[in-house]
Length: 254
Length: 254
DNA sequence: ATTGACACTCACGTCGCGTGATACGCTAGG
DNA sequence: CCTAGCGTATCACGCGACGTGAGTGTCAAT
Image (cartoon, rainbow over all chains, first blue to last red; front, top):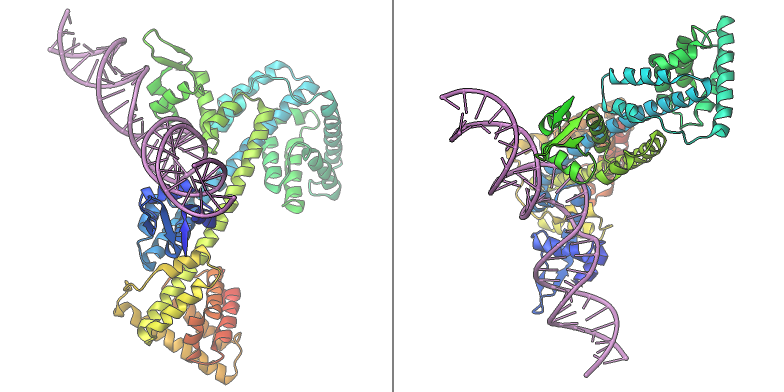
């Protein structure tokens, strides 16, 4: 069976230009060329092309493919195993990147919340400067620089969106303060019921997974802004809500 | 604090050329330029650069970065979330690719084993042709085309390497045949002890995980070459060893 | 003979720089 | 003051794997 370049392209799902290119670099030469210069391919080339596309898909460069298709099975196995390693490494790197993004999102969102809480709790602008100082004197990591950068811009949410959240948050924090005074543990059913409400509220900002919720609890504990914010409700609020959140995350989130 | 271009490059770990480029595309302009044309940067640019590098690392293009750095926190959050999706997708794709490679390796290695078994069991060259036909008339997937391609080349292993493997394999298969005759089940302790030896033998070819071992059991059941090979030992060998392997994989491998 | 689909060969554009070539500026030592 | 030796500037080509034309030739059918 003979294929013109277009037929081969359609059969294999690549462009004609790609076949031209593979011819030029010596990766896939046509079976023969007509006197008019047309390229004609046959079964053998189709099979070879399929191999090439397989190797291309797993991420080998054309240079590597040129080498690999001339190898025998034994060497192909070696090459594939080696490349599998490469893929696994880049997979791990990507996992780390995603975690990094999560962390940055957490910071950004935490800051975003703080900023908007300020709007309604009347923290003065000194707080902003203090916050920025804290960040600048931290590790100076990229994500922190990112947080720092954002100067005072007007929030996208108006009062209508923020008020219900603020009220619910206020109610939750007050309820928690009462629980502390009553001597309840962070793990008690009553407290965990409140945490459910808390988790639902946070869910209005972003999707809450176990990791994210635990991360947020750390944010609460570590960030002085949150400390000051929670101290208003109860002096033991921070460790209490931290424990309650971690317990809730462990038990109900995944 | 003022930085010359070299100092900024060293501080941030990028090349001077990169800074030139970022200036050219408008991503990071110097704080000001001297009358001599020299670029001078300040703290603000350092922080901005750190942001840029953060976004670059997570895989945003420069065009996207140019847009994102002018956004406020709210939009950055959106962008990050969107890009996190992108990363997760490519992560999944990579997972699939790795599995594909595993499958291909399995086929290649299976074929490799068959070919070399043939060397010592005296299968004639007709078998090879038959095998190729089987592959060609199969699904014609890329990995199968890959298997097909490899024509008769001399194996890299010599007699010295193959003989012990062949002997151990032979002993295992004979032992299994006896177990079948004795009426033992594939799950029985005695059989599973033999499977342990089998698994160790396979381990000499490549690392055996649960998936790989189960895959190999399928290879045994599906490939006519293996069928003929095992039929020599016992007519019920194929289903028997298949069950035994899957049971072993379930119980002892991960 | 004409038409329209298909083929060919240049050749430039993409993205994010690396790597020169060539020329000018700055500072220090002789 | 001259020069050596850096630092800096601009200009320009190169990579990899094609996409996307432009301009021209060829084939099959009407």
